[in-house]
Image (tube, rainbow, N blue to C red):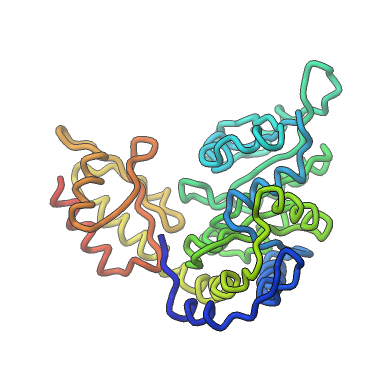
Length: 332
């Protein structure tokens, strides 16, 4: 929902462009090099969306008929329209985390299959998410342990890092420390970072070249796309600098909402820029709250998982937080 800043609009207007299908757009090349450097990967590829980035990775890493191990509530399962099956012929083996919001090695190891038994498919890939779709984060250590497990088994790991910079900020580490635990990683430029369009997919050079072909298959070969890469470059600098404020505003919102009788909120789960609440009061509901807020010009998605999700971003300042808390109090 973030809108491009005036600096981004100016960058779009003055961007140097070329035909990116022929790998001739200098602004895209700068963006890809910058992203690869930040993530500690050999190369990166600019794609139209996070879904396209994830699916290019799955199409490269997996072979038809192989299984992909991934969290049951992750974006690839919940919000990518079964593309993993319909395009790449892969089978999703979804796993419910047992002791955390994220997968642990103990959740994955029993489900790894080499395909020696003719009744079973082979495990082709592990997919992780960080930050997770609920706004919580996965520490680096379990990622490192899963990396060792995957290496022993000979399987690749892809990271849906749509909100990787939020996760890094929350964990107090550099993005490269998270990205180094996986073979490929997708980062979204148009969420908290604020670019109007696009994501980056990063990995080694051979992977990225194979992903470029998958991008073309998906209709993602764009021409003078430097006008989109230019604001994305600013997103990786100015946008990243803003994230600490977004996290602070989310905590401010969580503290305020938790003081309201009838709001159910887990303060410990507010680790990035998301606040999830449930309504527990007779005659009141999450659906009605969303409608009530919309009438006051405060917009959020309809309830998901029987809860309302509020997301702070560059469009939200501290004074807006106070307005939202007052509105929820008025509804209750």
